[in-house]
Image (cartoon, rainbow, N blue to C red; front, top):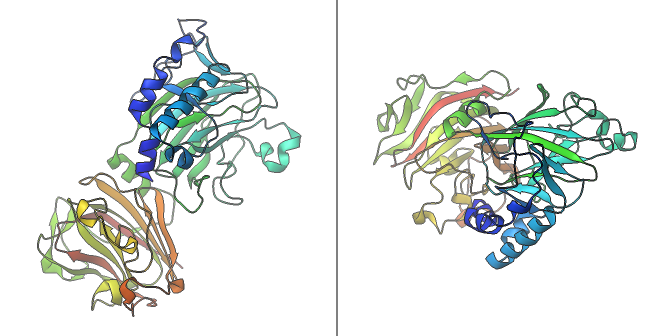
Length: 447
């Protein structure tokens, strides 16, 4: 999917189309008295004068868009941007939409970021902010009784297109200001993990934003920000963004709400670990498999149902695995409940693997979604939940596997997995001769 999104929003394509289209946008005041300076670490993605850096795009599937030829995509963006010019103006340093037309869409794509944006709207208006081209952070007229049945009375800021009853669909509190006043959003997205503050109130806390376009798949790895038009005037200003580094994203993900996690690794030596200890070393606060060595390094304690959080770093072509409920004997890919692959999936040497062999997959049993690893050499954050026979893998804020191994009846190469139904065992690393590193390893048991 990352390749698909890259094709969808090619920077060169967008720049060539939009360069000649933004100059005609109305400019009512070059002084931009409504514009504020970006806070430290942020940059403006609206310049307060014209639509430079933006193009038009309606509610349109990124999957369908990516399937078009480059010429077809170019033609659509040109037509959409021409349509947007009929309904978007810049007045007094503010983006103004009359409630109609295509959505204003950033030329840039964003992955992990923090967005600041102010808006002011009118009674009966209904709008929103698409993230990674997906709907949406909802903006309501919270007084419109006709829409109370679909959540308007709860206020703005929720992930309205999430499934009914899912975390984040409705805002935790109603924080909208009265009409005529400016509202301020702070939105943070780490993978699909989305937090929203409206007027300094936390209304969505680290909820997973669903992929509206394909609910069986994670949210896209990256994509543009879109400002929705939906039937009433809305004004936007002070649109600032701060892209979040991998290290900061990992730190924030590790601090996500949940019961207390207990460290499994002291950062200095292999105290508390058993098995192939001679084949692993501690380097710069991380456990690393020695090059040319392997075997199972596992915890001294056994676990039944648990959540484990860790960071890992892959060398080019790196291969390792997470052993779940291992007995400490035999190949964990078959004799543990499962081995979750830790693999540089996009390396050319792995181009022809079975889908059940790529990163995050329950080896030989259940395939994980691809396209969510950070570039080789960067640290990734992963959370694994083992609850009964259900195994869930969240990589860099994206759920890439959610499988019930009790339901698996077809195995790669028809190889039996005698450990699949184990209910208790060790957690560990299944080294395969490559210097893959692990750090910040912590666990919490489930009731």
